[in-house]
Amino acid sequence: MKQRRIIIICDQASKVGGHARVAIESAAGLASNGEEVFFFASHGPIDAELTQANVNVILTGQPDALDERNRLYGACRGLWNSRAKKQLSQLLEDRTSRKSIIHIHGWTKSLSPSVLSEIISARAPIICTIHEFFVCPNGEFFNFRSRSICNLVPMSQKCILSDCDSRSYYHKMWRIARQAITQQLAKFPSSVTNYIYTTELAKRIISKYLPGDANYYYLPNPVYITKMPQVAAWQNRPALYIGRLAIEKGVLPAAEILGRLNVPFEIAGSGELSGQVHTANPNAVLHDWLSSEELVCLLARARVLIFPSLWYETFGLVVYEALACGVPVIATRESAAAEAIIDNCNGRLFSWDKAGDFENAMLSAADSVTVERWSKFAYSNYWERPLTIDLHVAGLKDIYERVCRHAA
Image 1 (cartoon, one colour):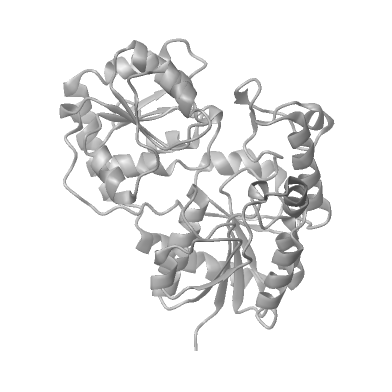
Image 2: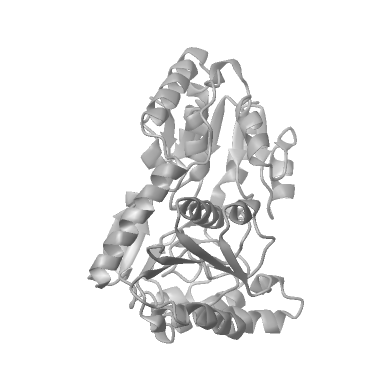
């Protein structure tokens, strides 16, 4: 008989973002290790990794709330998804003994606070991975108008009055409503006391807004990359960016500066800033989103990876993927990715607040002797303690045991 049922909550059953990728890979890894895993999501397509690992996937058959054709219906469903709540209730029925555990990865895009309400009322052991700063209405502690980190207390009067949203103040009001429902009706996060954090920065930023008796478990995200020969980064020329083309990612000022420095620049990703990035740097090569195999090929011809984020982030998966290949990283000091960088050993750290700091970091990367030293250290240092899926699954199983013992 299997030890327990693990129910994983995530908006999508495909790898459309960092948290979905971690949820899918860990679900498949757990199932491959003999656990009975249920993956509850809003929509697919269902990733092949879940199917191959025989994960039980339950979909509500709904798109993300903002993708609904009827925008009013989508807005209402984003606040309270009755169908998701009902289907989750059916899944949780007769599965709420102490041998079951519920792991929350994501709910804000489609599943809504209604699933949190259902989970908490089930009284099974619950754990939540901190993929975003969910106590903040926009999840990022970032003011999109001033393009700077926000230090306001979430849901305070100043927060509510702040016109900080990436879309409009009306959309901010919708986020405020969703946050109020989450806190008052779903009783989240006040009723959940187990959290997985991936970096010390993420824990430090959010812990002050979580329950005082919360338990924290450190577990980095898995880096799904096979060990290959080290990339000779010092023989390459392009700087590489991987990720969404969005304001908070810092790619726009980085593109402009790289164009001015005449540094070849390649991008794997897309987003609302695609046109502006091309205008800022007409010579930049945009590849759109690439498969894992294509990303490895792109990393093989990169001199450095840049991670110029303007917001805190919670991990920075692409940073670890680059280091695993031997590609040095130039990242912001203020982001969680800085925890992976030893300044001037496997890359450089810089601050946007310090004029010319990014330019200086890129000028350091122009020296091939320096880049060779960075590259060799990045590769050897990463593979001394690789963040493999096997280690991640082992860590999860240990955490689940501790959470279940604590619940008992």
